[in-house]
Image (cartoon, rainbow, N blue to C red; front, side, top):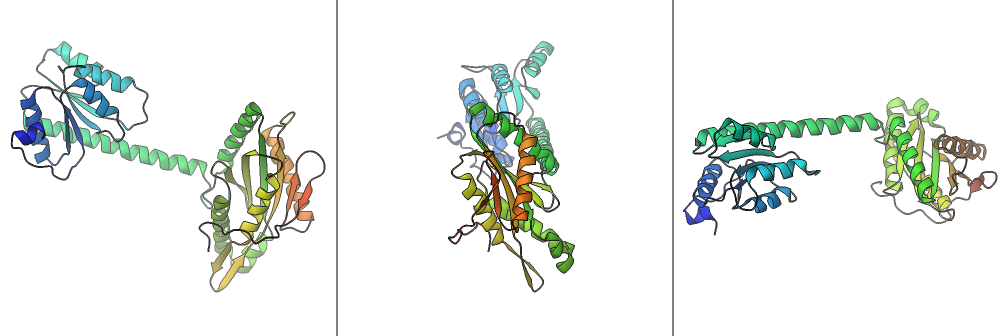
Length: 341
C-alpha cells in the first residue's frame, strides 16, 4: 500500500507524463501524490535520495523529477549533480527542487547543482502545477528538436530515391571499415553494381518508372546484404556495397547471391512488369598493404567493366592475386528475398 492510499487518496488516472517524487516526509509525499494524480500525472514516489537516483537512472525513467532538498542517503542537490554529471544516453530530465530553504545562496546552490527550477515550502499547489507544465513544454520541445535533428541527419546521409547511403556517407563508412580491417587484419570486399541497359527502361517506360526501378532495387539490395554491411548509391544507376569480415571462400557466393536476388526483383509499371539485371564488379582483399579506400573502389570499378565485357548480368571478382575472374551463376534457385513479391 502506498502512502497516498493509506491517506485515502484517489486512484491513478491516465498520465500526462510520469513524475518521480522524492520526499522523505510522508505527509508531503502523500500531498504531492494526490495533487499530481488529480492533474493527470502518473506518480512514482520514493522516500530517499538513493532510491531517487536509482529510479532516475533506470530504463524508461521519468523525465519530470520533484526532489526534496533534505533527504536520507543523498540530498536533492547531490542527486542533481550525479544525474547531470553522468554520461547517459537517456533523454533530458527536468528537475524541480523543493525545500524550506529560501536564502538566495541556497537558490544558487540548487540551480548550480543542475536543478531546472526551485520552489520553497510551503508551496502553492497551482504554482507547482504551472511549473511542471512549463517543464513538460520544455521536454516536448526538446523531443521535437531531437526528432527534427534525426530527420535532418537522415536526409544528409541518405539518397532520397533509394534510401541507401549517399556518396558522402558511404565514403565515410568505407574509410572507417578500411581502418578497422587494417587494424584487425581482416578481409574486406567492395562491390560496384550497375543496372544493365537502364537507359532502355527510361526510354520505354518513362523516367518515373525508372525512378521506381531504382527505388525497388535499393529495397532489394538492402534486404540482400548483411546487417553490418553498407549499401549506397554511387550515382545514376550504379550502387556500391562495402562488406567487411569476408573471407576469400565466401565473397564470390555473396556477390552472386546479390546478382541473382536483384534479377528476381520486378517492378509494375501500368500493365508492364519491368525486370532488371545487374553487372557486379567485386574486389576482395585480406592484405591492405599499399591499398587505400579510393583504390579499392577503383579496382571494383575495373572489375565491373570486365563484367560488362563478359555480357552483363554477371559477377567479376578481383582478389588481387591475378586478373579478375568471372563468377559462374548460381545453379540452384536462389532463396526468396525478404520483402519482395
